[in-house]
Amino acid sequence: MKLLFLCKRFPQQRDLIERPHGRFHHLPAELALLGHEVHVSLCSHRRLPSTERVSAGVTWSSHDAIGLGPRRLLQVLESEASSFRPDWVIGCSDAWYGWLARRIAAACGANMAVDAYDNYEAYMPWNAPLHWAWRRAVRSADLVTCAGPQLAVLLKQHRSPEALDVEIIPMAADPAFVALERTACRNALGLPLDTPLIGYSGAWARNRGTHAILEAFRRLRRNSSDARLVLSGRPPAAACSAPGVMALGYLDDSALPVLVNAIDVACVITANTSFGRFSYPAKLCEAMACGTPVVATATPPVAWMLGNRRQHLAEVGDAEAIAEGLLSNLVMIRVNYGPLPSWPENAKKLHTLLGGG
Image 1 (tube, rainbow, N blue to C red):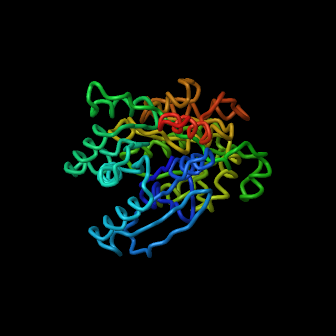
Image 2 (image 1 turned 90 degrees about the vertical axis):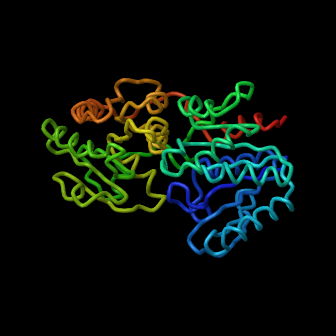
Image 3 (image 1 turned 120 degrees about the vertical axis):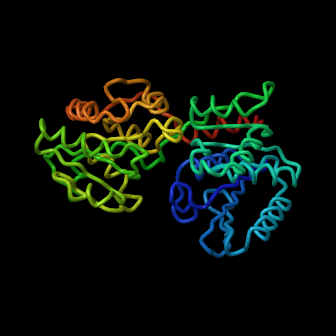
């Protein structure tokens, strides 16, 4: 079959042309390995030039909404779709691409699917017209997929009673995230060899509950005074300057699996919000794939991902429970989380849902 994916170029702040990752890259690439002809049309709004390349058996084209202008961008996308003549148009990465997939599929007479990995309506709660367009796309889609059961229940509300169920294509770790020898990883990053290391990597925002990290770490150090909190990315200055904190800044993509394997426990923080109640963190997938012990806030999606293993879960916003979990998980070396989702398995399921033999 011919499959056309529509996606933003910078999902999760990473450039799919220069830094391929996640479901946005691996699902199209794995479907190409299964014999499909796959084209991914990417959109940006950074005045970037249009580009096209073939990588991982997939044709990737990118166009910019500011550089071309919205009207010209739609014309280019519709022209590419008309030339490609897809059997399926699949919108992913945010609500705009549900609306766009509906328009492009109608224009070229293709089946239409949408894929969601978050509650897209939580991104811009004030943008009611976009939310209505997203819901129309979900309602009219021939296939709807998403990252987990809580999000499936939410999206099912926008489907007609006779429509097919919302199918689950779970989040998975990228292939580079495998178990590595911890001492070698610490040496590679210049981290202390005999010190308990807690790791956090990700966004800092009060509405995501990250304020609890520093309080939990302060409580942990009452019982483990030599522990260090290792941060990557761009944490606030108050976090970087706190006692016991080691801030590494932004790391190259190739160093991220090394960091996950270097720490003793990974801390994964979500919140009880319209975003957090439907968030399936990629960072959790990565830690589990490496066998690194985790302490995560027990939102329903995170508890589902962890198979409700209570030793790895703490109540949302409860710094004392997070600290207790970190302390108890420090004694673990590696954790066998059981069978985990993978992108090849996910692509095989999507292949079947799209009508592949």
